[in-house]
Image 1 (spheres, rainbow, N blue to C red):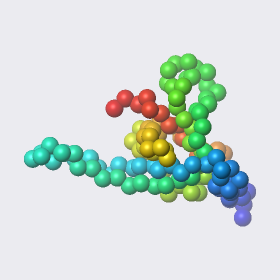
Image 2: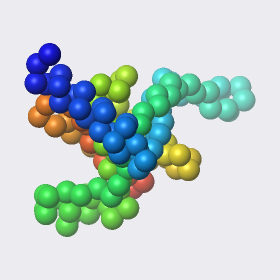
Image 3: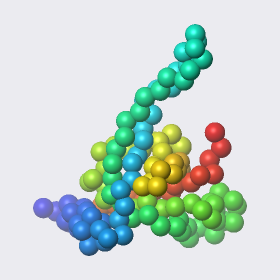
Image 4: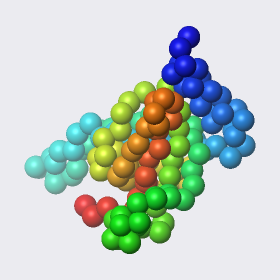
Length: 129
């Protein structure tokens, strides 16, 4: 094993086992299509759901300009997950994260650490449709 693989295994163990008592299950919903039925006017849609275990908390950003510009909302959340447990690469401003209480959040930003062991997503309710 190389160091990158070691860090990825460590991140998975930390998130799912060591901090398992504060980790939460989150559903990442990836839309496949949205179409309108012209006859009935009903929306026909399909999506795929992926379940991940991660640590939710408030979003913190060291970029003071972004924090004061209104680009980051005070109710934005951070979702930290192990990269190896993620079956897809969520599309920003397309995919949503659904927390255990049923709240839907837009995934508006993601960043990986240098070892690609974890992915941190910024979740926001403030995305205009």
